[in-house]
Image (cartoon, rainbow, N blue to C red; front, side):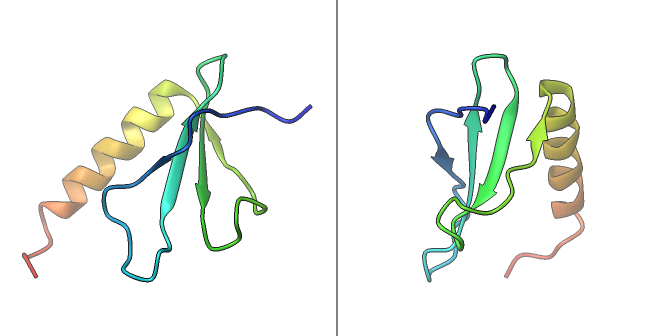
Length: 69
């Protein structure tokens, strides 16, 4: 069975060429992540809410070390 994610939301940090990362929420609370380069046909990693929160925290912490462009 394929998990249904809705609605798919685009990252606020999209590339100018239209490539971006999307995330969607399943009825069971699982969060799916996909890239738009393959039009939604590629793999969709599935994360629990706790895994998603840890991922976001890690990304935000790593951004603190990156100088502004």
